[in-house]
Length: 165
Image (tube, rainbow, N blue to C red; front, side):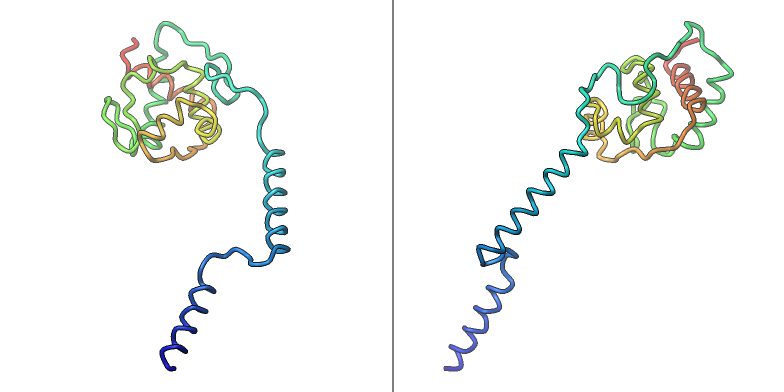
């Protein structure tokens, strides 16, 4: 008898701690209705603009790059790198936390780099190249809140690092 009571208590405990689904049909209908509503609301938030991977996601559609390096901008970019970037990025091809910067200006268009620097979150959420990089590094780059001028200087520093004179 004692074993039967313990068995009943354990079975009640197990069924109450099992899944969180409701046992009544009315409750299931309400749960499904709220799920449907959430899905409909999610669709309202989704950006329906087509994505152009050559453009990136941001305000820079054309970045004028001179054949000759702008030393003043590159020096300003080096200061930004030392303060905001060097903790995660090396100037070689070696990965630290983020990818190494060697060759970055040959792998990506200037517009892509500028948009990634200034609009990191949107680029990671929409750009296939940025998403692939996230899969390799496993750490999402934080938004550094750089000004457009700082980002442009950083691009020039990247060009210097890649051997542009």
